Image (cartoon, one colour):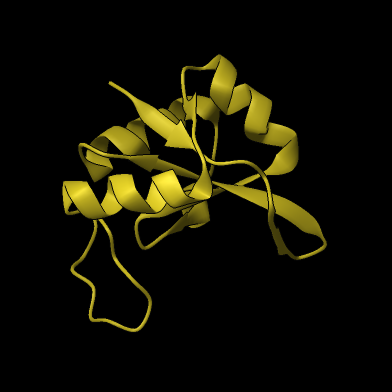
Length: 92
C-alpha cells in the first residue's frame, strides 16, 4: 500500500494544504486517512486535503512525498482522477 502527498503549497482558509492520494483505490485512501484521524469531510473528489501541520504525520505514517505534478500524474494514470466540473460517481 502506497499513498502519496504533495508539499503544503496550496492556500485556503488561512493556511497551506497538501493533497493525499492513492494510485490504487479510494478504499485504500479512506483507510489511510482514517488511521491518521483525518475526517471524511476533508475528502474532495479524488484526494484528501491535509493541512500543513499534519503533513509530517502523513509522511511518518508512510505517505510518499511527491510533487504536485506527480500527484496529478498518479491519479490520472490510475484512473482515479476526478476533475472539477464533471459529473462524479459516488465514492466508496
